Image (tube, rainbow, N blue to C red):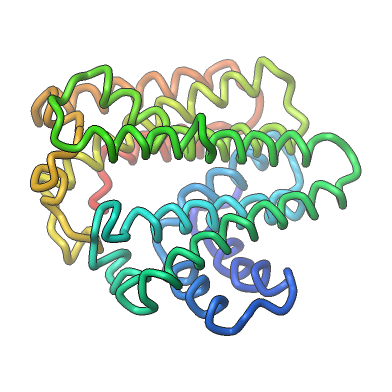
Length: 291
């Protein structure tokens, strides 16, 4: 197993090159896509995919295109999320949001381009693998990013603004808008490493609980964090009537629920063969993150 920094270096070294490998992208579009894609950040999702594959002894070289594709999907979702019609934010990863630099039309196209590029990269990689692992991994990522996954969560997030917050509504948003895109890398990474269905299911439970904890902490940071540390504007959830776990449960109970979710995530990996300490430790550090 590698360290987080080593997985991160792999991702950072491959992202722009993977994008450029697709062919002659119009210059303005490439710049807008790469502006957000190269903006840094934790790269949690691609790191998780590489680590999940590595946990079971899979090939990091085979997994890298899928990891980069997943980061492209995440980045597209952030570009669109920041638009005036969505969360209307001016700051992302400490820099002006994409539409503030390139305009709303190009920001929409940059998001569209990253999503399309991700699908193309995964399918090319699947063809190279020559077996069903790549197809199944691509399907898992597409499904969890799609209309029954992340996009479904975003729909509830947008349409629920200003409505009475309930645990059921917020849980749906957390499971899909956030947890699906944190489950996708574990599911895909395990599949690429050749895991059986029981192991993949355990990985999916880990990803779900990690995602729930991650979003609960995110809700807390929106209340308690500051822009300099977060790299985005705090306090927007309450101002825009967003449905959050804090709005339903309060700060103290949200902390307790996040800790319980992390405990369940760690427990889900107890029966997974392989070196799972990296994934377990990463889940535990979620409770202490500041951005």
